[in-house]
Length: 109
Length: 224
Image (tube, rainbow over all chains, first blue to last red; front, side):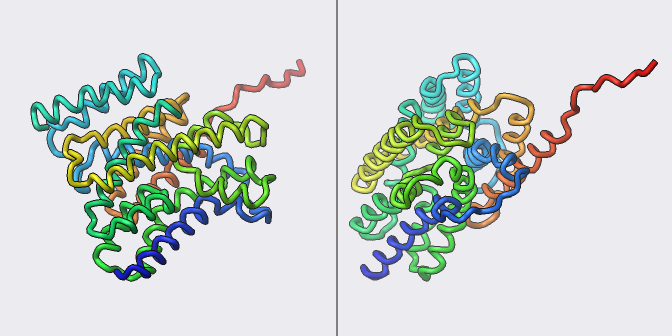
């Protein structure tokens, strides 16, 4: 990839970032979105998060993990339990990492 | 937002390392980090750019990975429609996934309010710095960052914690479970389209639940 082509590619990607993130509000024209869909889209943030998170926890290289000796599962369970107990986001992250790192570095899971 | 910043930073770092190790020129990678500012799209196009794929394939891939932002933008509209185009362009550029989630959690009513703008700009400034600084570090220190320690998982844990904070009734619980399972089941789809499939499945099931919840029994008219 030549220097100019690289720069053009990146500028195009930048435009795509702005255009997709602002797709329905960059134009002033009213975009008709039916009421039922508007109501359903309230669940989009949660759905997008779960859709990103769960594969990161239970999949490796595009496949479900096949054995239980995986540090991520225990880290996620510990993090989830901590969140249920304290409802602190930072604490949840630290709890998960406190379980993950020893399992991964110590036991090689 | 500050709580989540540590997770965002961990993710920014591993994305930066991936850019630094991609074999593409470092100045181009710095430019990409600062301008494109969309981690999952960047990770998706890096191997394509490195292998010299046609530009339109790179752009089409980024477009597909970014489809979820279009869904989010429909939600943003009532909050930002009154701002001038200049502000809306900046809003569009800066609004990453977690900014969207946190904002909608804080302001569930789809109507503008004066306290929204400071909340938004504070959030995106935090997110931008928490992402860009580690991302640039990752690009330049790609060789030395011990990625195999697995600290990138902190990003996943941050998202997990935010997702759990959004679970507050049966409908959200089932919608979240459906989204997660659909994303795993559809993982083999190209361009991260499994995320779009998962959002569609979760929205559909949530609508079904909302509309099938039995209404409280009405007293019968008793004329006797």
